[in-house]
Image (cartoon, rainbow, N blue to C red):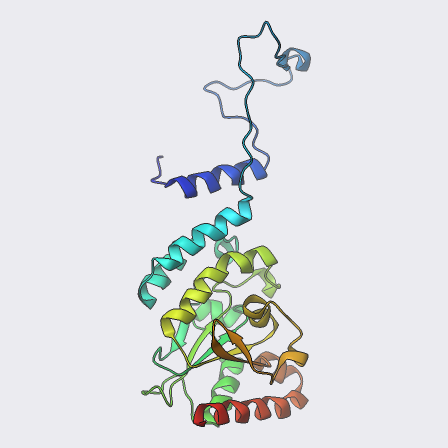
Length: 263
């Protein structure tokens, strides 16, 4: 089967095969390796050989190539529908193969506040929506206390929600650094298209992806910036369900957010 691949995609696919250990093309006829003398398989190049030595050019690391592909795809998206479609056809992240649904976003994209969580868990994967179930109910109550909701109709009362990763990792494991970095161009484009006044990072993974730091207990409540946008790290609702004492800090952070929006 032939595929329509541009140079960058074809190069990344070839480098991936090399990384997996492929060292030769498949021939037209099978070879019984047990009947072939390995010594006769060695190719000697010398003055008498009519085979020219091959010059191996340095290649771009596989991970960098995949990130470049993601960046090219993301930059071409002019609206959220195009971005969702691009993420749906991006096949370089292994998490996609084990996930049931792409978890893209929920809420109103005109919102002044954009919430970014970590990676989808089982319920989110099943429904294809971020922050659902008990965790989602708690998030709705939290932001509802300061007058924000995912079904809000105006920029002032609406909330827009997504995750740092669009696919659920197997057994809810932490995504690997390479998986996060290859999806980061889509996440940054997502933020640019929504164009919120404030970005709320809920959890360690969101902070690590966009701030390059983790340790949510130290980061929470401290304003930062992402590409010139005001950013507030907060505890993830799942952490609040596990430790109710963290709700006091979460409430303080919500009041800080409310004051910034009013200010």
